[in-house]
Length: 216
Image (cartoon, rainbow, N blue to C red; front, side, top):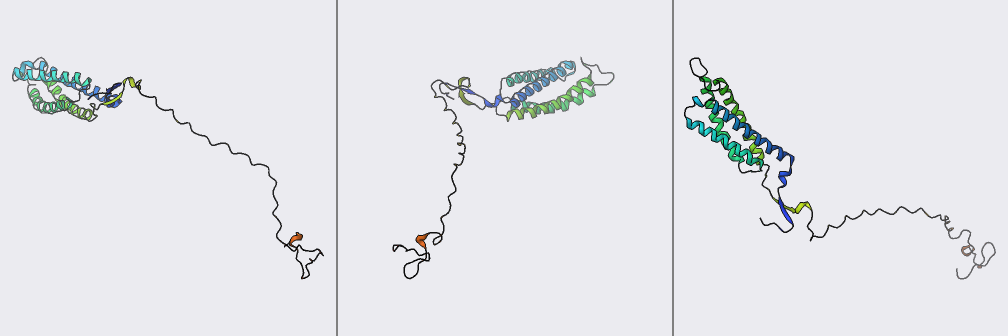
């Protein structure tokens, strides 16, 4: 992906607190799984069915350590691989646990660690692998790989015009106090108190004895 001048790529989903927490949890569970496999293999090396099984288990543990290192570097593509390996390890652990408990009998020589302890540790591997499957799938769905462009350093480049300042909110002018005006009296109705509208008789004289204007 070609980045514009003055911009850089960043991963917004990696900045979230839940993504950082899940990354640490996945790496921790991978390291716990690797430690359990190494302890069981080295502690029961003398009574393994074949040295090849021991070497494969140690390589398996080494891959878990490598995966943990890469997950801490936000490598998302290894999470499905770790989940698939965990599913296979659940099957292997369920079969191997009975074999260790069967050796806890009198007359059988013990390996470096007691068979009962090795059987318990092998059973512990099962829930740890199930937890690894769950957290790896949750982390995979967080989409750590999403990339976006942003200005270098989070600031706009020099050639970009600064954003316009926000428009100030216009406050409405305060209401003006009403002016003191004298109350205008309504004009009297026609014919009351106005000589121009006084009633006149047939001779052109009103009742008060005044001449009505002939223009009215």
